Amino acid sequence: MSGYTMRDPTAETTAVRRNRIPPKAVLANATIGLLSISKERSEEFLDTVEAQLTKRGLKILRYAKPTHTKPAPESVIQDIVEHCDVIVEGLAD
Image 1 (cartoon, rainbow, N blue to C red):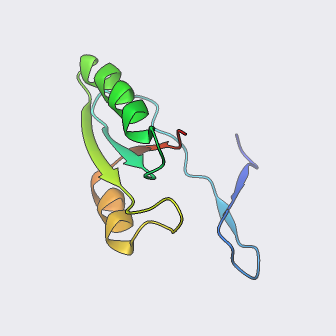
Image 2: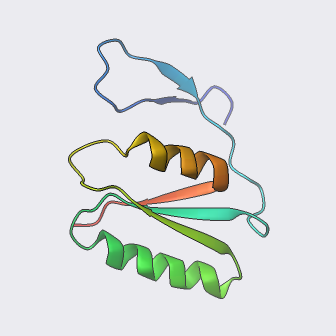
């Protein structure tokens, strides 16, 4: 995937290009974060994802935004960065 650049979807006034971080090749020893954006049914979706990943023996940490209408608080983002190798975001409705 060389040459792939992810665009930041936030509402900045000037677009910023950020290089994509390569995914881990193997998840066996990874800590996977599950982030609910607090939309209806996102917890239900992430409960199902967690059950499937737990069956595979993976370590899961759960996070939630206080509301889907605003970005996650800096403290939540920092905790994810410090403790997770992979993040899955629940956007259900």
